[in-house]
Image (tube, rainbow, N blue to C red; front, side, top):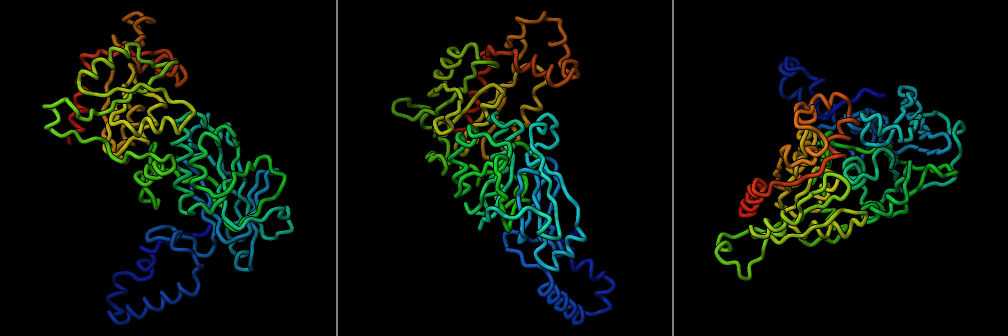
Length: 452
């Protein structure tokens, strides 16, 4: 691939500090003007959306491929791009003598799994790989069966899709970061497609693309485009967008969600001090308890509800399901959301600004992944975060293992046995019986935050 230059270092490479002194002020300006003229004549056109100050651009070729921590992707612009599902190949055909010279310099094929968790070998096993292959003659590629007038994004619904957390952090947020700039004028070519997934997130898919999804794996046709993005752009952190590498932020994404699902509540309630003295007629802060029925369930929900109501909360209990619209409306109507660590907490993305998320962390060595999954992302969402780490006596594990077992004495030794063993013990076999007297302090802290 071509050597890349950046606008903020281009001229620094052309003139050293000593050269600038020798040339003098007038000569230096003259050289700058010559260099600028050269750039205007010989650099390929790119839209303001695709080139920004400080970003890396190719000298001539409109093919940029990047390997980042969580994803690999290629952006192909202004070329003859042909997607052939039979061979799992994205052909880039030279369109001019200049492109032929570019391809001769960059004649390297790249294999990309278009799913945003490339470091996870288990996830990537179910992701179809696509070869991005430059070619110098159209007669060595299959002819176009269907030509499209808008760009395409090719991405996978393999990996951990179907798990709500991974649906958002691995697919939806990266898809938003990649597709939003096209303002709907882009087609989605989906590999490892899942009709159930497309239907579940139809509001978001239709908000990002004005066109029907192409199930590319089942296409006999050769689909041709002038611009294609293979893979999705993803921030290294979970549930995040890196604004230094994107035109958008998590604030923009959450506003996009409110628009897609017609969510009316923008900001959480702000409790006024005078409200504390008069219970009659005041609006109570609404607490949502995210229920779980299979594992990591609350065993004393009624006791938690009674304590929360005594503190002044209006309480609602709900479990996340496949009806995103319904649950998004419930979450958005609340000021505080609490639940045990798990995919259900991903619905924090629907909370209003300045709301409070309380993550109940199960017993065991779960603190770091729990906080990385939900605590750190809450900052960019403008959500206040609290967590509550349960003690051994609040865990159902005390019914399964003796008090002197390694499960209690040394969770690290369990984690060394591998992720599946760790998950089976601390995530799959553990329920929670909250000490409401101890947890009361956390709910009071949430009320304090709603005063601010």
